[in-house]
Length: 265
Image (cartoon, rainbow, N blue to C red; front, side, top):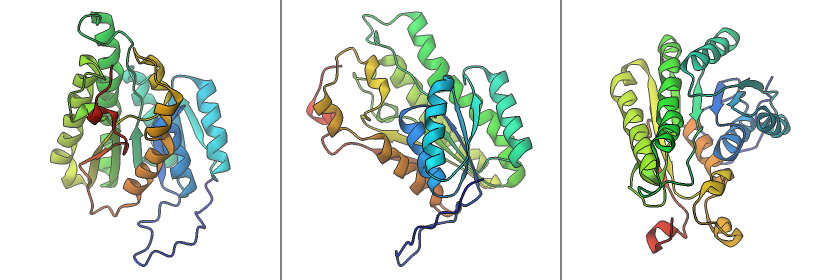
């Protein structure tokens, strides 16, 4: 079980809502943003369920989550399989009674991403995970959140979901734009059920996804990007907001934003 967050917060308006004992499910939890979100939420006292395709990566995250004060549950999952997504959500509901915060962070991109090099298989691979997989998770989550009349879904989209970018490529741009639109449609229909969705749209983040870039990224460039822990703190901020607050979309970028100054893909 999680240990309550004992940090002494001196902010005159408090630290936001108490997350102690609440349930968080994170997809793409093995690395990057998902891993950082899991650690940040565990530190706030939440119960953590970790999902991702690679068990070894989830075990690594689990070690970090334990250090933050929580014994996590691991649910290995390929979110492109809707049947398996439904099974995982059903098991979480049976064990914990529901999910309070879902961080849908699983995502991929491909190296051959320009129109000149992109093929049908590459397009399908990106859309299958980045858009369809997010839909399968939301579709499975909403019934259990409706029962509780409460719930926050954080859809980790991208800068490319707001601004079309050569850097991401057409498949990634399309999938992330779709994710942003899907996220807002949840707010339109489910606000009456106390459910909130935020499309979190970061610019460049120094995660393992950079390894799929057609042009290698230097260590110096990585250091200037957003770091996973920055996004972990952002997820924690969103989770701590009162349930009366819906941040429909949050765009966050590095101060040294290479998209503004121009870069090769």
